[in-house]
Amino acid sequence: MKYDRRYKARKLGLIQCDSRRETIIGVTRTLLKTSMDYLPSELGQAICGLLEKEDLQSLRLVAKYFNELSIPFLFDEVQLVLHPKSFDRLSAIARHPVISKCIKTLYYEPDMLERFERFERWEGRIHDPNRLNSIPHRPQLGASDEDFEAYELALEDWQRTPNHTYTAEELETGWIQYQQLLQGQQDLMKSRCGKRELEEAMAHLSNLQSLCVTMGNTIEPASEYLRNCFSSGLKSPCDDIGNGHAAGVPQVRSLYHSAYINHLKLKTLVCGGVNWRIFKSPKQDLVELARVMSESKNLCLKLSTGYDEHQDRIGSELTQCRRYLKNGRIRDMVTQATQLQSLEIHFDWSDPVFAVELKNVVGVFTWIMLTRVSLGYMETTEEDLVAFFRRYALSLRSLHLDNFHLTSGQWSTALPRIRSYLNHTDDVLLEGHLSCSNPSLEYYLGMAAFSDPTDPEDKPLIERRKALEDWFQNGGDCPLDDAWLDE
Image (cartoon, rainbow, N blue to C red):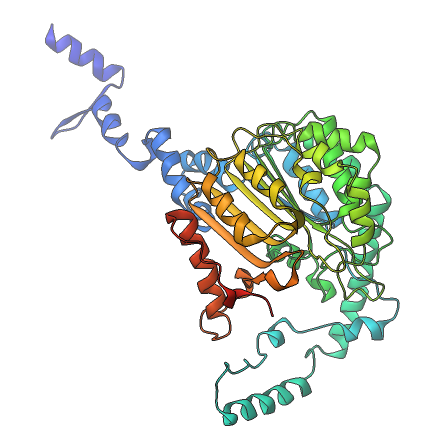
């Protein structure tokens, strides 16, 4: 009987027999399943989540199993720029049956090329990227006269070097490519910023959770993808100035409209460098935007207040901006996102007036899950500022105030009152000018992003910011000091 069973097993291919041994196929398969190819999917996903994208690209070539595991980590974000081929790429990704379901973030850089009618003007704005990296470094305060003389000579030598080293043939080709790239952008703008392509793409991106729009290096420096798309024209787009419309406004409208008609409810909305006139959009557009962000947990708005006619001074529209935003357009939109956990709203300038009052941004609404607040270039009263933070005494963990003005009250009393409510903050940053109606009681803390710890002039400003952070976290006496007063 035992012989018959073994004979049948051989006939069915379950046992292989040679002159030396018999191998049970089931055992062989069990041993094979101990290889990396047969890791539990949960463990494989955990491994993929720890790897950089370059490593994931190599891992997905190992086996079909790892290819399938890597796809959600490799293709969770799609980049888009204002270039026809970039919109074609977005459409192709959206049509892919697997990758389209993995996309969670759309990262959009709608910067436009600067317009030049003549070759000479264009060529005068061409710079070799490596040239900017070779600018001589200014000696630190207290350096010797010899060091400063050497710096001046090196700077003169650098200024005499040409802006670029392109040949006449390369410039001629670059000029032709630039004109074609500019025409491609203008065609997209005429088609309402690729509205049809965006609508069709978002119809397939069913798991999209985040929209990030950034212009002019406002949120992050220009991406390598943006530079590569326009490299043939020898000049990358940066910002959206002098193109006959408020910077970024038509591009953002098309993006959020496309999300709205596809019934997307986004968790994160980031909008950097876009002109404040986005809030002057028709009422229906703002209704659509409010609907899209109604379930958002993270909101970041970094708004431009315009440039002058020479495009070299920001804040040229501050007066109009302030007058218009008194109507509470920002407040009405932001308070539609009732589940916010992170709120970040900054303007970019405050001279001659501040862009907005805090009450016209947040009103008296309370976000019960709010843990992070970052606000900049606004004004308020001491009472309104203290009342705002009182509402988040139990939830707030991170606080950032940048260039704030008190129209009544003063910081030496406002900060201790705020500190009395915020007992759970892990991260605090106060920077820029903390000004008030009394010019003799204004404090200057410097800007964290531009501070050099090795610079003797920056070191005391860094120490001021650190002292305030330690005080917010550990208590004690408020560290505001007369030495901090802005002269």
